[in-house]
Amino acid sequence: MNKHPNLTSPARILSAGADVAALRRTLPRQANLVAVASGKGGVGKTWFSITLSQALAGHGRRVLLLDGDLGLANVDVQLAMPPGHDLASVVAGKISLAEAITTYSAGVLSFDVLAGRSGSGALDTLSRNQIENLCNELIRSAVLYDHVIVDLAAGINSHMTPLFARIGKALIVVTDDPTSITDAYAMIKFLVTSYPEMDVRIIVNMAENRTQAEKTFNAVHRACGHFLQFTPTLAGHVLRDKHIPQAIRAQAPLLARYPQSEAAVLVQQIASSLLASGPRGLI
Image 1 (cartoon, rainbow, N blue to C red):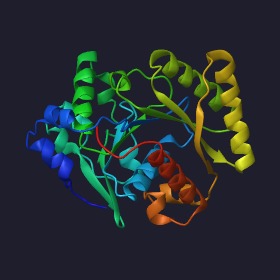
Image 2 (spheres, one colour; image 1 turned 90 degrees about the vertical axis):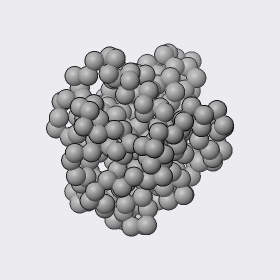
Image 3 (cartoon, rainbow, N blue to C red; image 1 turned 45 degrees about the vertical axis):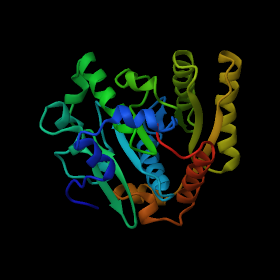
């Protein structure tokens, strides 16, 4: 892992004051903003965001992982990233957003990270105008990436609402826990009611087997169809795997530490299905 920030090509373009508006006019529009959300905590949302980012990078994509949990950011903890280059420093005016983007490398795969600050409630107290300005700057940055993975806070959280109008896909992570299923439904209801154009898909995590994963998905699917007249699709499932907690304890992405594990293979399949659902390109 890089110990110091390393500006990649997209970040260098931003720091050089590129005309991003002109870039947006000349590039084909694509839904490259992907939100990873959940109805409740403890379902493996951040772990999945990290692993998906690395899987997409393995396909040669330019990937930015954004820690969108402004109150309890923890991407930096799971990746053992050094403090000082994060959204809190951007808001404080210490560094620019481009300078806060850090390249995380694990083996031959690397992706960019825009971290929050673990254990700091500073970002949780931002005003509405500050949040809007931050989201607008993030949207301008997104034009330079193939995929921007936004790890949202658990539950219906309004912090990153200005981003939602531009998010193309929302991956809702759910487990077979009844409260997870209920809260996932509440999250989906909020999204499809407020943003009907958003592509909402389900990720079943921590499943004991494929049959259980399908049962969990069907429970969410039935509730959405009955009460919302909306039928989400299944983006994929991840089986419970002892290698996942081992990788988290080691503060290393699963694909770097246990690339042949069952969970790693399943996340790679999910990444491949996302790539197949749309053409490559930037906004």
